[in-house]
Length: 83
Image 1 (cartoon, one colour):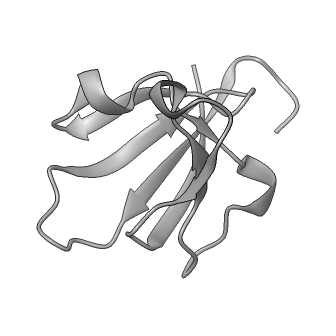
Image 2 (image 1 turned 120 degrees about the vertical axis):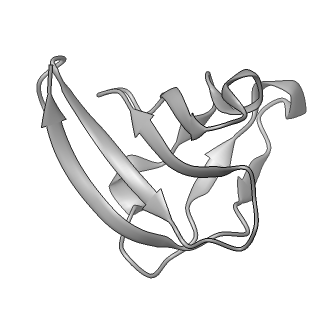
């Protein structure tokens, strides 16, 4: 992803969690979480270069410092959107 007006929208498998999609900016930061948990996930950094369908994304949660964590939910769809 090279342009600042492009975002990634990733969809997660549904394991009963309160979020199913994230919108991620060109720098890898979550800017939207749907349908819930905006206050939890917005601002989290995602390793967008390692994102792939079927994998669990690596994230850095600001409240946890520089620690990289692997999310519990697999990605089932990735699309690029322009705004």
